[in-house]
Length: 234
View: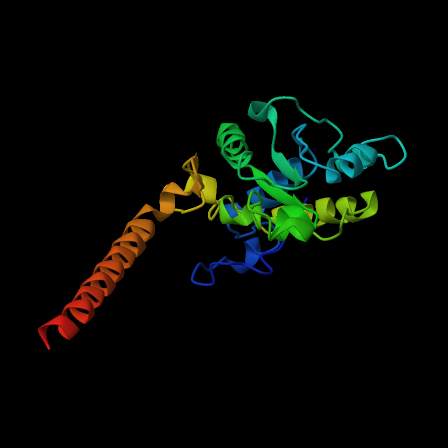
């Protein structure tokens, strides 16, 4: 078997002409990435995880009618430690966010998140509700958005194919789970549920805004006192 050096990635390396039909100069990433991505894209294991009516469509997608085994995605796992994909299927309430983030942190890398439906992506018809989060992407990095209310099984399959296409573009050299300095790698701080949902990554902003609000209130109080005293002095 002979190969040529067409498309070499290192033009500064010269190959003797007598060996040009037997030697190929390439990058090891170009050899590993296709095999690495092919294995991952065809063995994505979603997590058994549903929140609302979109979960019914996800369950229908897993039935024999749509045959997810064609994509290697039919193995739904009941534990995050054996899952590659978290499908946020339904309305995300503030009470559920800490649990969702905790499950995400328990998933091994590489892991992916799919936002299924209008509620998971932006709050949907419940966006103005006091207990609904207007988008899971405020807390987790989302890879694929699937529109619809609820999306059909065909739409979910299209989202899974889009995720496969995204995996095909990844490289071992730039994968975030191999880079400690990547902001999407590592654990996500679990939000604190109290009178409201607090994202621990925004504590500095919350403290700064609270201090500014207190300063404004103190300023208004002093102005009101001065206004009340001025007529008496006159």
